[in-house]
Length: 319
Image 1 (tube, rainbow, N blue to C red):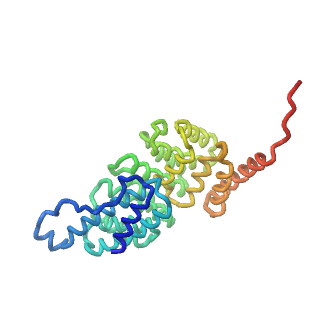
Image 2 (cartoon, rainbow, N blue to C red):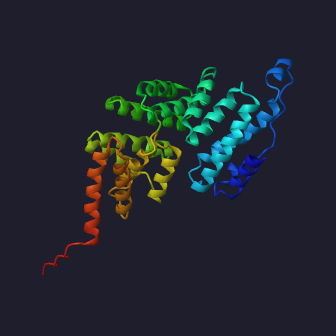
Image 3 (tube, rainbow, N blue to C red):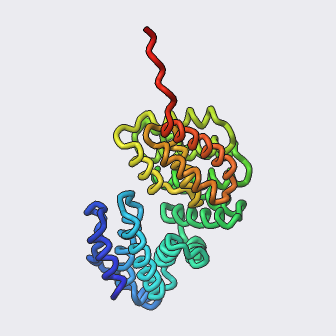
């Protein structure tokens, strides 16, 4: 089928690591059971597709995946997930996977329907946390703040690894910020005690960058600067590359906020003046709620660029 070929092709041409290559080796046979065969007659085929879709989701999270391969992978994943769901509409994992790929492809209404079907019967655990984060992000983008906060609070409390807890807390913090409760937004991120940039792990950088953004947009400039300094200190090597990885692994729930994240992260760092200016301008032009604050930063970045282009006359050395 065309979507199977597409998944294989994307895995082959992607610069992602080899351990993300999608394979199609079938999982162990599903135990024979009369009612299982009646209710889930395509269980074996569905299980095989689940394996491929899981690998594709992992690959989408790879920060080294280029945009062309990412777009192709989302398209192929949506087709395969939709086909798998039609094979067994009662299977919860099929509903989750269809919802996850629909959300990745921007199909908000379809994604919400699949994910709510999953959440109606899903047990507590990692997958439920993922579904709640997706539902909460959708509600936040739609402006349904109470619904977003409720879903994301539950997501943050689900048993999950640090990466998932960080994603949930960042989304919750932005929902609380949008509702006007900056104190609670800050607390949501400060609760991530394990996410410390001193460890050199991406969750720590992501949590501190989100916290700095919230401080900055609340005009708590000193706290924002201190948070950024703590985030930057442990980063060795290519700083811009680290920020790229943070934004791929932990994208803000509202897409335009990625401009604010990037601009704030690189503003004031050597040789990044032009990148900061462009990111501030992109956010300002989006008309997002913090556009006026971004405009202040953009004007400062523009002044820095002017000084670089037209430096003042060098002072004569004292004799």
